[in-house]
Length: 88
Ligand SMILES: [Zn+2]
Image 1 (cartoon, rainbow, N blue to C red):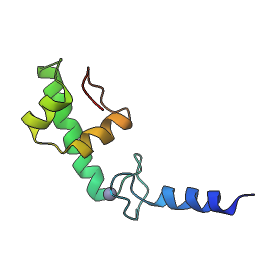
Image 2 (cartoon, rainbow, N blue to C red; image 1 turned 90 degrees about the vertical axis):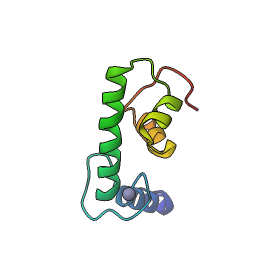
Image 3 (cartoon, protein in one colour; image 1 turned 135 degrees about the horizontal axis):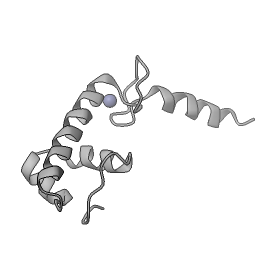
Image 4 (tube, rainbow, N blue to C red; image 1 turned 30 degrees about the vertical axis):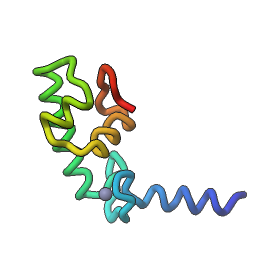
């Protein structure tokens, strides 16, 4: 048995996927309360924007909604939003 892997698993389940801070309470998305709120709000804004402008790109979202790229990338990585093009 690899102790390092076990430890990594333990710590990654207890740290926020977004800010790497410690998580007090379990969250369905693996983020701390603060980031969960931030990400949920960004997600809501993005969904609304995409409903209005279906072809919107990452650059459009960044410009129109003023959401940090880090949040947008997180949402994409988690598969919560998908954009047509120009994401890295
Ligand atoms: Zn966090």
